[in-house]
Image (cartoon, rainbow, N blue to C red; front, side, top):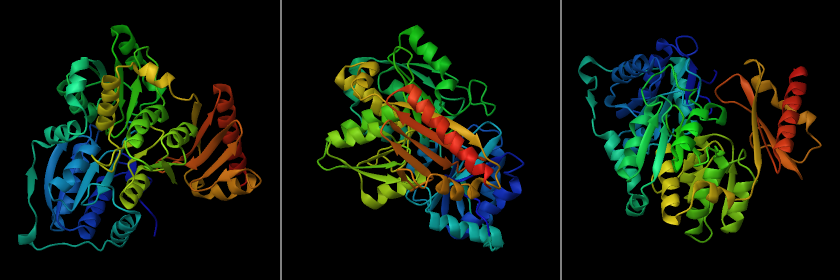
Amino acid sequence: MGRIFGTNGVRGTINDGLTVDMVLDLSRAVGTTLKGTVAISRDSRLGGEMFSRAVISGLLSTGCSIIDLGPMPTPGLQFMVPRLDCVAGVMVTASHNPPQFNGIKVMGSNGIEVSRKTESKIEDAYFKKTFTQVEWDEIGTVDSYETAISEYIQGIKSHVDVSSIKERNLTVVVDGANSVGSLVTPILMRELGCKVISINAQMDGHFPGRDPEPLPKNLQTLSNVVRSIGADVGVAHDGDADRATFVDSDGNILWGDQSFALIASRVLARKKESTLITPVSSGKLIEDIAEETDAKIIWTEVGSVVVSHKLLETGAELGGEENGGVFYPPHLCARDGAMTAAQIVEILATENKTLSKLVDELPTYFSTKIKVAVPIEKKSLLLEPLLEITSNENRITIDGVKLMYDTGWVLMRPSGTEPLWRVFAEAKTQDESDRLAEKGRNIIEAALSKI
């Protein structure tokens, strides 16, 4: 029996790798495993309505009832699941993947993505087709819930200093990636007293403004707008708005580690001996922040699901990823782009500093990310020759292979959702970071040649 869940949910090309029949059976498996009332939502992707209706049909056939929240960010659904006393949540999204992809994320009753153990139970039902099918008079009901977004926004506001932010009268440019971040963050920022300019704000699953992943190469329009109008900060989301990338008033695009570090330095300093959860893909900057605040770091495999469950298990004060995902447990043990945006705006307001000044106060490192295409049938076979090639190196093998050098580090690990391996590198200069990334690429290609 194979697996259909990747690093975070089930994803595939619309009507090819991800079909209505597949989603229907997957939702039957979810309903068979997690019986009760289920909240559902979706982002702006093409196929979202089609797959949502398949999810509803599959769940109803197993006796589940549905609360349809309509389109909203993944963390919004996660916030609402326990508040609506649901046994589960299902989000139709492929997050940051290109426009031709869609997918399914499954959350438990606490709003956090289900554990790997529960995923296996769902997969077992899916492959064996051992679905619960109720009698005609036991089919569940479908209700809509109109106030989910406003409740979610109020939840975020309860964790920041609203009056201090209002006093600063900041100007914020929000790039919603033509998706559900545009339904929340502009309203949130306006309610925090900011002047808001929105770009890529219309919901459009073709993603006409830019690719949904908030990488620097995709954020030049946001950078230009922030600089040209003299805004204080720019915020860019991915397709389901669980991540946020920031642009300072000079148009400089921050790496995810930098915004994560700004928040971490403030949150971890509030309590002695705090704990921080972060994947092996995070860099030296996060280690520096932990050292400064006397916090303990617990390293994990890459993947927001792993970080969320480790936060629940340990009761840690904060979690974060180098891709702009920040997990603030008093609000939600999951990454949340709108919450992250509110925290960055709060820092700007309460400390009365520009974002560029705050970044200048951090130690400086340079990062490089590249992707190496690997045929799907060879993706899982690559690790063995990779370990063989790097056997004499100083390395960490929690997730993929991370090679440590005096000048920096390089991490090579398989994508959980695409036919490729990812290479992350970091060093004290951009040239050295680029060199290490290329070294990672060469090692992967050498390992590939051995298969």
